[in-house]
Length: 196
Image (tube, rainbow, N blue to C red; front, side):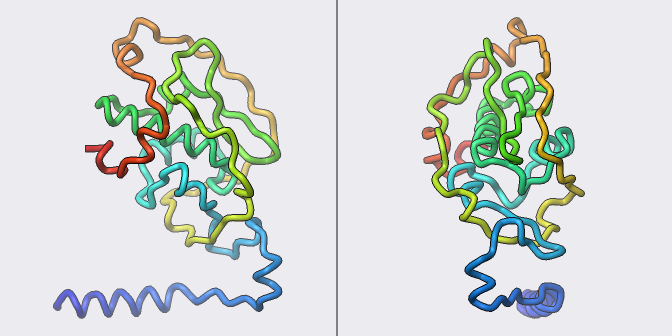
């Protein structure tokens, strides 16, 4: 079978499995991020524009969703920026980014039902000049098939997140090697130039 024939078969299969989403204009105008149909999830534009989120979801990102037990559509874009920045810095320095390393630098918290990550006190800063806010980010969304995230995600209720007490590994080489990097330096480059 030629590549062209395979592409046609794949296109036919995709077309039959993904019915077009059709809304009357008044429905579309009043739609919110919470209106995703069954089989779809909500992604916010700023995940990509500011957070450099890849649609080949990375292992560390899946591990974070699993560890903290929340749904990606409940994530605040600032949380996405912090996690992706941490991952890029680790990859650029050839350090394996794992959930326990993320937890050394960041504390998860919840505000108005959206989850984010804040810098822990007394830990060296690796993200300089993070974005302060995102203007109208909740209104810039789209729906995507749930299969994009290859795991079952859990919707978490609006709740306070207990503060974790984690000992700072001051003497470990990986901690000493991680450098502070402004987010603008990473996110203005092509993602693959940082990862190579």
